[in-house]
Image (tube, rainbow, N blue to C red; front, side):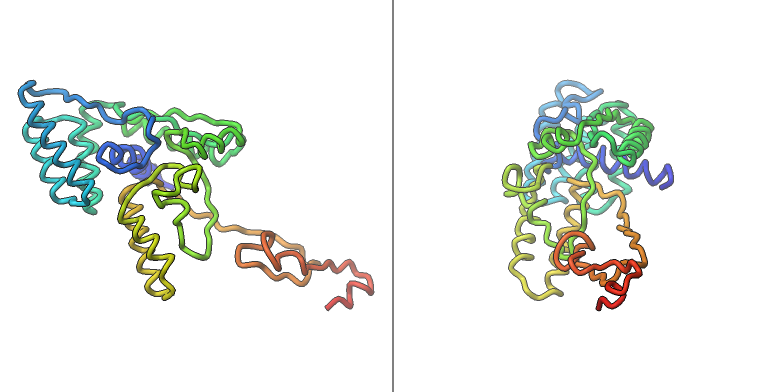
Length: 290
């Protein structure tokens, strides 16, 4: 991955993900450090009330899914109180929802130039994973270049996953195994926050909720495909997760092992799996094995 690509991933995860939290999307745990300063850097105090009024209008529009109205309100807030990192962060998050990433990146860049380091959070990973450590260090370096402070915290595995199950983290590095069925209800539906399910980031989007329910009720695979593509698009906009890469699962198997028949989820998990494998050790008994 190039430095530019990693920097883009860093901005997406660090700036977009946390900025959307203050713009109304539940993308991080509730008691994480506030990512944006609630005050401005310049402008007379008389503009504060008007700025706050426009921010409230924008927040209400976001909650109702009216992205264009939210953009108008936040731009008015930026007009009456220019160079306010809070307003710029909210405006950037809204532009991302409107699928205008270049404009969103510009807003985030302005905010970071005005107040470098105003975003700060902890990135956890399981201790002992060299891949996770390398990624965390690279991610930290690229975030630093973008003006974002990331504190890497390796934690003993059992303690780490206990914290995740309790939503006790700012950001976490995880690996997921893909399922053949695209249903992600347990991970992203708002009712599945711990201890009910796997929604440890406490993600909440009413539109995603309704689509996930519809996906479970629909039997036509073509229609299900379209439903889950909508889910993917909304999750990509909200950024409760920033997906980095997909790694193929490769398993070497000796030639003397026969009768190999993989289960749909892999060779070792479920029936038939390895239950029907047999080893040819050269003896007459095994040589005649069907």
